[in-house]
Amino acid sequence: MRDLVQAFDDLPWLLKVIFALPGLDFLWGIYRLIKGIHKGDNVLILAGIVWIATGWAILWIIDLYTVLVYKKVTVLA
Image (cartoon, rainbow, N blue to C red; front, top):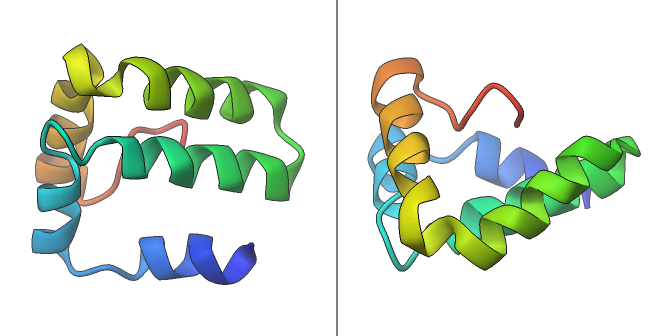
């Protein structure tokens, strides 16, 4: 699991932006879910589940903004 989290962290900035677009944002939900399981963080696990379920609708905007501004997904992740 740590390898997958590290792979997502090491993605080029442009690929992170593409993954934050609607339709692909569920990948960041999976990232949050796996990172939460790895760290044992229940809040991050819950955020991952919510992102997978509703990220395509509105939460992708948050990911896109944070990737553009901070070069990583939200502060939670």
